[in-house]
Image (cartoon, rainbow, N blue to C red):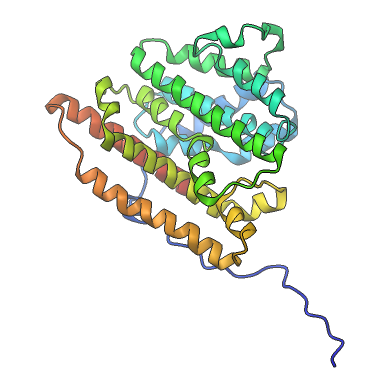
Length: 321
């Protein structure tokens, strides 16, 4: 009998699904203000939050301003700056819950999320949170909310607030699962990631940045809601595929590929399974976009621009990486 032990390879080769399908084959347009606004936004965030050199370097390397430049290619300089400030803000904010000091502290995380939402929603639920208890990174977000309130329809502001509430809810579910050791199913994690990926607030930030005037009733239509959900799913699924290795090293459990691996699938089987989820979304997108109804000539122009904004967010997510 041989004494040679079988050693698992440190790295294995995986065939990834084709992420660049349907409208994602198009070359994205980039906002011409990107390079100058990137510097301004990163410096403002770092100074306001008193970040150290390490965090400033991480934000610079992340370069979320480039994501925003693809997501809102037609935004004016001032509104593009507001969008970049939110984009650069969400990275260190989300990091606190993803793999930072709050990742397994549900009670403390709940308080931070409530303090974030206070200026956007009825703050009665956060009345026990004193001003002095709000983190500087939370207060920076207040500046984004204040700028959005200037000459912006109440409908956009309400949609943004509700989208942020959904993002907070999804992030808290991840933390609770981490704290309790609960292992969600693939279907569960897909629904949670739809919110926690932080995609939907971007829709309404772009609605603001591009000065759209979409009638409020449009957002109640099932086809528009389907397109919004599909865009969020595309971002979340492709994120989990592309960030699996990094998140595995960091011990981040809320990843769709990770869930498949924990259920006994091989690496290739897991990527294939999650890839089929993405393929399903691409197919559903084409059908949904083809069935968008009409609300009248002027409204239809605004609706098409809003749908294009959703597509730009998905394009930004893939081309930014």
